[in-house]
Image (tube, rainbow, N blue to C red):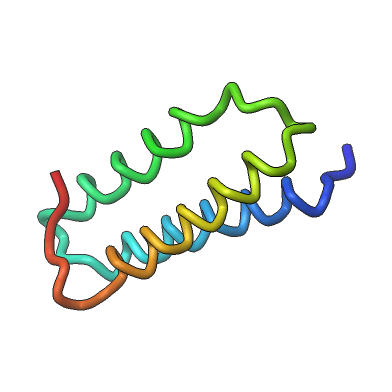
Length: 77
């Protein structure tokens, strides 16, 4: 199955989130992974043809990733 550009962008963002989780302290790594997973699962029902909603969620996700990827953030709950 071929993926659209937006689908590739969503997968790339998810992979980036998981990679950033690996950089966090061992004790809080699971919290970051669970948070990333639930954020993506919250929006799983978005219609794949609703481009504006998907693009908005991608922008929001990238901003959140930038915040949580900063070294000052040690844990998330």
